[in-house]
Length: 81
Image (cartoon, rainbow, N blue to C red):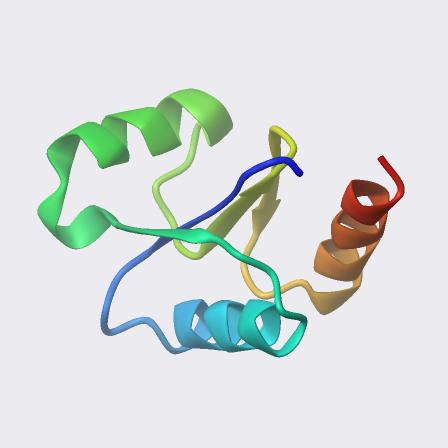
């Protein structure tokens, strides 16, 4: 199964919502705290051209914010592979 990454910060309420959503769906993910990882900030910007969080990467696709519909769609694509 492809890797899921969540770029987040500890104080972001939408970041918490994304991670809780993924946990409820039993999706394993890597939580990348950009508030203390300068390399992760660079990686995030290279992938999306943006610094805002949360950003969720599923199968190489970036989803900005807590977009439940987009997350569900990409997770569905993951499970069909």
